[in-house]
Image (cartoon, rainbow, N blue to C red; front, side, top):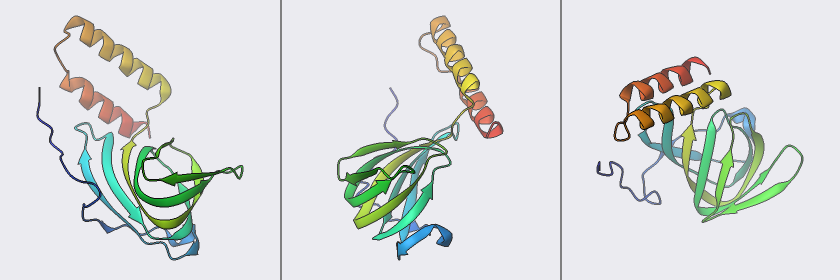
Length: 157
C-alpha cells in the first residue's frame, strides 16, 4: 500500500493572496487567500485550503467543489433566495455551473476538493472501462486510464 503523500494541518497552512474578482464583491472588503496542497496525477482533482475575511460576494463555481469548513461562519444564498449557514464541521457540495452569494460574518477557512467535470456519457464510459479493467486484473491500476481520463476531461471542458 502506498504511503500518504500529504500530511498537513489545514488550519495552520500558510496561504497566498487570491483576490475575489472586484465585480463579484457585493459589500465590505472580503480578502481571500488560498494554497493548493495537492493535485491528482491525472490533473482532474486538487485539494485546496481557502480562507476569507468578512464581506459579501457572488461566486460562480466552474468545477465541482466539495468543502469542509474548518472555522468561521458564512451564509450562502442560492438563486431562489434560500439561505444556508456554514460553520466549523459542515460539509457542502457545489456542482460546476452553480452560482450563489456568500456573506461571511466571521473569518472563514475551508478545505476544498475541486474536481473537473466530465461530459456525462464519457464519465459513464470511463466507469465501465475501469470496471472491466478491474475484472480482468483486480490488482492493477491502469496508468493509461488515468492519462486518458485527464486528457478527455481537459478536452471536453
